[in-house]
Length: 549
Figure (cartoon, rainbow, N blue to C red):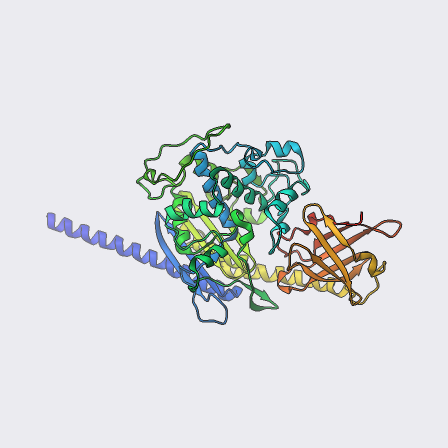
């Protein structure tokens, strides 16, 4: 009888095991198929994806090519710029400092970085670390990015001096407006407390304990550490006139603690596991007791990570990272597609409800690359997607297909859906830009003689911008941003369009001259022409005044 029971039990176990293996295999096939179809539909040269489920890396693969037209293939070890997915790592470093009572989340930024100044003294003096990290500063969307984007010559001192000149666009702590400069200041807080660079901190206090041995704080450090060795890194690509084109990128080196990390899906899977385990380095072995953050005045200590606790940061800080600190609007599309009722930002993370589950996520974009990290904590699932082409539609389609497989969501052809959406959007925008193009008059006569416009202008937060007259044409040059130089073409009234020499920027802008009744230029303002221009080209914040004033 026992033999029959054992035999039946064995058959049951074999059945369950084979069923699980078949189910797991079905998921893998679906994910692989979705990735390859998305690459074809959206013209993506290379993609890398990792999936973590129940503390196991269940999927980690590379697809396609590191560089279009060459043979080197993307693998799970291929490096990409993860851009703003760096922000959550900076938050984790600060969480470590809070755990060690070096500071609290309510510590005032000026208590650590005295040179920090915003648009008024009250906000400056009340501005806390949570304000710094949750995008509720009162500044505009992407305000100040032109100081660091694209490649720039501004110094750290220029960034500090420029902040106070950025205009307030909403009441302090009332509206969400994404801002990279606040995270650069967060990196400076870490440096001031530890007396070590942010680059050194992230290497020693995050990459090393997690075993993220291939990751680097930025591209220049990566190249110097590997010296003459070949770097397994993807090249960024843009679609220019429907042709894939390799573009140069500094992988956001200037963004440091806001977006400069270089990593691969192998290493990022280790990061996903720690995030899902609320800071535990090895699940089930933690000796941690929840730590209550200190309040100012804080005590400065000379410390290193105590790996015997097996905890990168405490569960208390993990909860605060994923706690809503500022609400965001929910679109009708989110309600329809995802059954979403709330949307918010935590500390380095976007938060929303997704088909009845909490979704924690963030994206990152540089010129020619897009990345996405997504976590569903209650299902113990994390996903990272790295691509070497600027298609958010492709990433959206891929992650939704993955969630269909792993969360048993209703089936929908997301690749076809996003392809149709992208094509409609591009067609609509192309038609709009063509209409504007027809109104440009390269050789037309403007209301004033070109010599009136040709001056040196000053913006308080950016610096000098020069307009010269050359061969009976106007040319604009941003003094601290070498890529921003181009020709001004007459549009209407006293408005021109600057057409940048580098056509990969997709950032042509209206240049509007305000003229006094005496015919003098009083002010110049700029605004992107295309609705698809990256928000970091925050031309709207510029108020150019003739230097002679």
